[in-house]
Image (cartoon, rainbow, N blue to C red; front, side, top):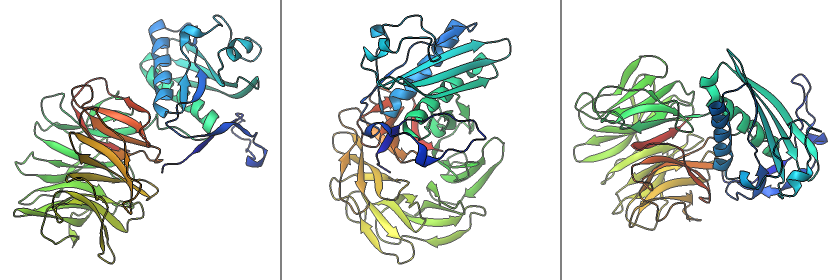
Amino acid sequence: MIQSLLLSMWMVLPVAQAQDPAAEPPPLVGVVTPGSASFPIALPMPVDLNADDAVVQEVWDVVHKDLVTTGYFNLLPLVGYVEKDGGIEPGTFQMSDWTLLKATALAKIRVIGGADFLQADVFVYDVNGNALLAKKGFKVRDNREARRLGHKIADEIVYALTHEHSFFASQIAVVGTRTGNKEIYVMDIDGKGVQPITANHSINLSPAWSPSGDRIAYTSYKQDNADVYLKVVGSGSVTALSARPGVDSGASFSPDGKRVALSRSNGADSDIYVLDANTGLSERRVTNVKGIDVEPCWSPDGTKLAFASERSGGSQVFIQDLASGDVNRVTMKGYMNGSPAWSPDGQYLAFVGRDAHFDVFVVRTDGTGLLRITQDAGDNEDPVWSPDGNYLMFSSTRNGKSQIVISTADGRVQTVVTDDGGWYQPAWK
């Protein structure tokens, strides 16, 4: 969903007290979209109360990167800050020090360390109105959760200014090569907290989350054949969903989680099939024409499938209505388009096209309004949408080895979120 969000004032109220939307203050600024990076915000280093300096730095680094990644904010550089030793509560510092910087908002943080806890308080201010917008405290178990604490603080800042929660607490499934083999991993949205899902020393590809987030479907060659498996996250339970002669790949869960669409080879050709997500039994063959049909993706309402097909020459993106069987071609330019990903609002498809390199594009489902997201930045592939539709994630070789990038849906702000290379085919939970 490519949409505008209002950056508006918000006062934190006690949990038990309901908020009256009609009583909310007017917007702090006008309409701003993720990608404008135009909202000036000051983020001074946290006040340190008995906390390890490295931990305080890590918390600030996480908050700073999170805010940059959203594409909303112009983070004012620390070097220009006038105030050096002010407090974080109202009345403990001079707001005029921040109006001089032309900051519209100010986020002040205090980090408190203890033997068995790490705590932080954040205060968010409207600088021009000299008003407190939000205040909140967070507590985690110890220093090892400093990054989690930073994500919580960043989310609070974003919510205070947009009335929308961020994606900082979400996870992705991804293909990684850190062991020398292509295995499936789960990681936090910033590339940290990496946990293996597979460790079969084979080739594992195309992870896909179930809508409930408790299962991951993926393609594996662990039995010397391309089969689709289901892994229950957090357990050792793995079942073969589709194991048969030929290539089965590119699983995609239906929105209700009851079915899986995938491509299945029949000799030299391949077509799209729909299987029962629990039993693996085939429910229907969706495509049956000459030319390879691969990479199915469900529409948000579960009535259509987008996929890549060579039926018209080259590879193009098509949409098929599951009830009527009607097929419409979406991409009209280029000769190698694929990897379609449906936006959560059902209005757009992200896909990969190739000219000199592989690049990410967005187009309306009727084929109009083509928007190029990447250009002159290596190969960019495997696009997926954020759950709210305001962002895209994809793999990119812009820095050499393939890494994971988060981009605003218009492509204006793009952030590499992994620290090392060898990451492909992200799936956003």
